[in-house]
Image (tube, rainbow, N blue to C red; front, side, top):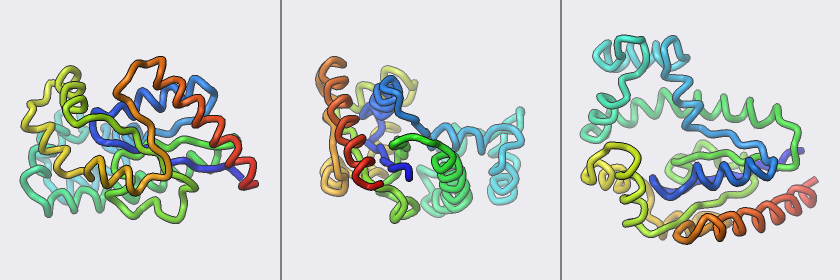
Length: 202
């Protein structure tokens, strides 16, 4: 039976980099953000419900979710955010489970940005890992790659759990303030640990 590890962390913490390093070691990786994008592309499985709930204004000319417009809405309207999550989260979970359970490997990494903010994954994952770094590092990374304003980045962070909360909830933590060499070493050590835990679980 495959062992499932949930990988999380705040925006800009380096989840994608860590996931890539696990993948380089041959570990299968499933990214729930990628699943979300598939669900909200033209004719994606979530588009009909989004259109019915929010109207045509939130669907772009190609038929995909207008992500910028929806981001602005959910930042200012908590009820809208809950409605969107009610549409997306069950679909994302179902896709993630289907993909993960079809994989034959000692363990699978599932990248789940809001792992601890939602109860969807409780009772399924065997272990959780958070990527941690200083908040100012998070902000600098996001500003350098996204085109978002600092105010928007801080608004996103305010809706996520704090570093302290994630560190308290996660089984394991990996620091991403240092060099890529150090990060690669940490991932290598965790890979050895997860291989051992997967073997024990079987």
